[in-house]
Length: 185
Image 1 (cartoon, helix red, strand yellow):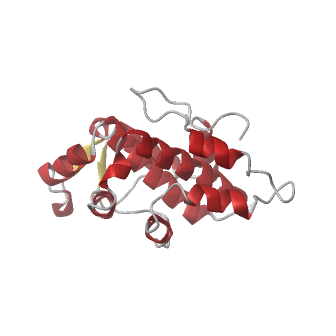
Image 2 (cartoon, rainbow, N blue to C red):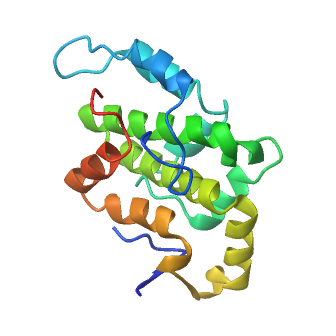
């Protein structure tokens, strides 16, 4: 299979335990606030509610990348920090995946594509951690000495790579996100 370098990303909620996080009540509560102020503009209250599912530092981390593409090393460092590591596991990972994908869909509506890309990348990273573990991600990164130019085979990070591939275009991002969100979104 193709390989994805660390330094360059190629441009469900409905999930089962073997495929990723399942729907969660927090997003369902936020969904009731997801009405739009007009036919095209998302409600700020829905955006704020979904950001509330993430750790307080996550918004600044996720949105602080001008092109929306985080380096794998930065994702590992942020999400494996003691105050964030639990976010990569179990129901908390479920909440974060759902929130990031829903937020990405809202940011696409707002035409904030780089922010949507960053949300997709982070959601995909957490999705990968949920299905393997943050420790697996750290070990894989170390084993492949990615910073020295070695590549990680795509099959070792399938959920993350799907997200990386989805950010190539707005249409791909929308299609990717729609596979995880309930149809009513």
